[in-house]
Length: 327
Image (cartoon, rainbow, N blue to C red; front, side, top):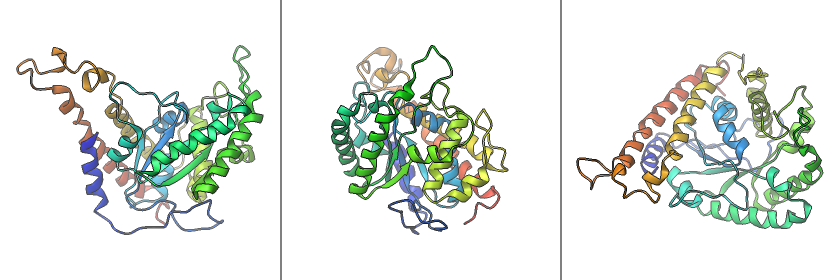
């Protein structure tokens, strides 16, 4: 992961122009782009945040809204992560180290949905753990976007539990996140209220919890609007059931983003971590058979770095080609 930082720094030197980062939802018609040129945006959260990186909707909207800003997006979310625990394999870099290695300048934090199922009695524990998480991030990247969770939906399948029963408590957790954002001077994206007020037809989830591809597109649109990027969200339009946009230019960018994020996923989450840096680095199969002093896996993994850089270059070339993407 360390070599990728070199590429990020190289890109950061290409442009010194900065655009102010908002500390809240901008007023209607605000023209300021909500990220700075050369920002590296890291995403923290659980399964739906991982899926958002795979679908690429939000990253696409932010990229098209700010062509030429040379933005980078890095998914650090894992399925099952909460503010309380984010377990990783042996010797996996700490969160602070991950943020440093990626050169993160902004951290998007989306928690609260899973935690709300513990009940209202755990709200104070949630607030305390959330604050500790932000303190860890602030030591590396002091700018935050805090995201309140979507409400649960009633499942279609009667054999599945009805998680919407937790929504009364989830609203309390969302209120806690709003309070934390206000105290920290952080940008707030309120999906809890935003999606409820959108009141659009169709379901967001397939089981009451996990977002469908079309649901990811709708969440991304609400997210973008709350950052003052309603124009680009409107131009993208409504995605089909597979999450595909029909608006000219949007879908090629999204596909390129998803391909880049697949490379990033494979780079940061190799399936055989134990041989890379865990407890099996001394195994013969972890070393070159011609010279057991040479470990072949680390250098092989670094071959992802230029591939990720090339993928980001393709995205940058595609984004300005989207109609009306210049601002």
